[in-house]
Length: 77
Image (cartoon, rainbow, N blue to C red):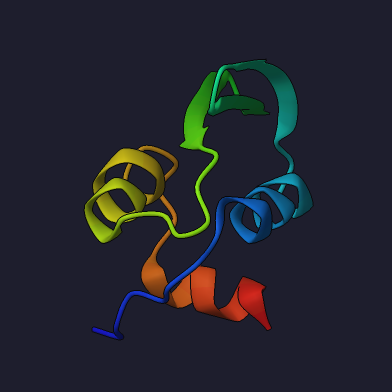
């Protein structure tokens, strides 16, 4: 399993927009993004931080949208 990259909210949001998410709203320092996948709606909330904490990235974002660390690294390039 590859190591989880250090990523900012700005870069993560660019990646999420690239894979079909749209920005829905922002409340304080949290940005809500959403996409439709088949008959499922995926919603993710990204904290607007310079560096997203590894636990938040892995469990709160990647796991929710079924994106692997490998896929994230490929999208970063």
